[in-house]
Image 1: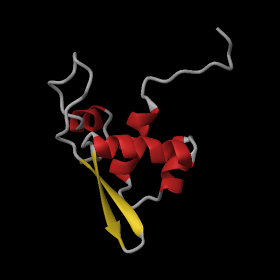
Image 2: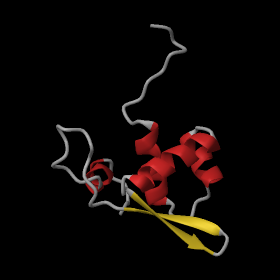
Image 3: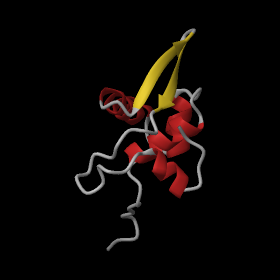
Length: 96
């Protein structure tokens, strides 16, 4: 395997979810910088997370704020019995 090819245990979806949980007032740009992906990718991922009910978007003036639903269940068939909030707890992170 090439040294240039890197993989990570957490997907970009998980990283965006964690970033939004830890910094609910963050802009898409700040989330993008925190995760290390493009703003366009963050927009797409947030839209998917909102559509699936993992994230709630609220308007605060001209900005969006994001609230993560820690009681949401994982989508993978082997993990549907677990709540997303347990991911935050397992990683020692503050989250919803």
